Length: 204
Length: 204
Image (cartoon, rainbow over the protein chains, first blue to last red):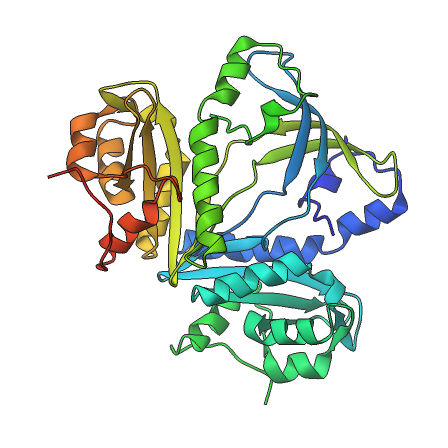
């Protein structure tokens, strides 16, 4: 799956011709914007340094109409080889992917690529903190699921099935939506690391 | 400075029109390729998970000639807001920028942007490991300089001057070039973290 960059399809100069592409680009935009705003909040308050990686693009042709600015005239979206977000929180390496679904009862695993799963495995082996943020759009519920819980499930189902919401409710941590930061996932990480937190899990 | 992606100018379809742009793109390609190979070695051997971030591109126009592949027809290089490399080494967050110079006696600070310096400061505040890899092309010497040593120097000179090589020799760690991995900077990090290492510093 290609992740279109935030704001890209908001540009007036963008002229998508296929409805599929428009929907594809729009999907997840709000959730992504909220995560970006959360990261901006964390950065501004000195709580963490977590950035979204740039969208990987394969550049094929570049023109130089002016000395000052090179213009890319042919390029293609590449599949990301890692997750979208990474950074540092109190010395700990943080690595995650954020996805959302319109489903109400399960989360489709096809949202994750095999190489992203492999990347998360590698991060876990290096004692990094890897997880996914799963957003159920219709339900307005967001969960943090540790990579160590996602990976075995993914492997068992060969990435072809969906994770039942019961599994996510059981293994994951629900993130209560805040005003600011909007998606306070660090509360959950703080708790996982053994610290005190105002994170409130709805799982029992 | 815009960092052109590795391999970009090797494409046959690339037709750079300005010599300046060609030189600019070529500069650092070998050093960058060596770092990428080093990271691939570390990854393959389970020693660390460190990736180069994709080149940030501002996408303006996208065509959809086929359902299968969107074609970007207008885009521009954006300035990176962070450093180029980040990842995890034994739980520690690693963050660095790699630059090279043709100079023999000093390293121009204009190679670094103010926001990259700010980013490194933020990383250091979060107890991440931030540094720069400085390569003197003509001298064939490569140094690791901790961000905590670079930042005060950068601020003092307002980013307008060059770091004398004596300062780098004094404060930094020279990296002996290996066959594989080519630029074993992790040896240095290992040493900085207090572990044993075969890293050999030429500084006294």
